[in-house]
Length: 297
Image 1 (cartoon, rainbow, N blue to C red):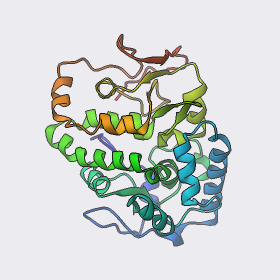
Image 2 (spheres, one colour):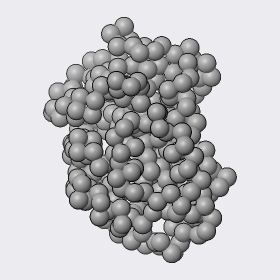
Image 3 (cartoon, rainbow, N blue to C red):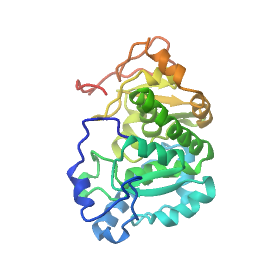
């Protein structure tokens, strides 16, 4: 989701979508399969194999099971329609192709109706490790496998349902922190150890290593209000990762009416991305090595 009023559409988005039309209301378009080049398929294969080589023992079991159950293509950009058959049968979700980042209200409407917007185009070979805007690898590989898990699927739908309410109340930046620190950059504590479930990490080779193995970031136990008070990073690795105990914990913590929580948060100080609070459940306090001095969001 994009809650930044200063967002400028990257050149690659404009270039990839040249000559294509999307629906003016919901921003969807048919997946333009004919636009994928041999280079695109080779880039997908490189990214897919690289992540699949390193994620066992790092990604949560639910993600690995979803990847296997969906039978996501290893050698080419997947056909959304084929994956949607399995996804619909499992949890009633489906992917819809979009040109790139879409307005918040459209994004929430899709999630509330169990539609996950997936940017149709793929990054280029020189952008394997970093891209300003989510592409099909981030959106599909990173997000979609967990939508086959019933509890996580329900959580994401509930998030969409709460999105418009947050926007109308003026608390969208607060709700954006919840998405960022769970759906994009969340960790989960399991009997086998800490694992990744956030899509922003699962689709990134470098952050998959950093989030679990580096001494630099904080790893803090999930607490809804604590998380919603915490700013985040968009230009570097995260300074803090929040750790849930289970997807059920996440769903139950966010199933309540957020309106009173928003009001309560107004009386509490906002925390920086790297702050540690006295009440935190601390798994690890980071040594802050390599932390950037640029502003948090």
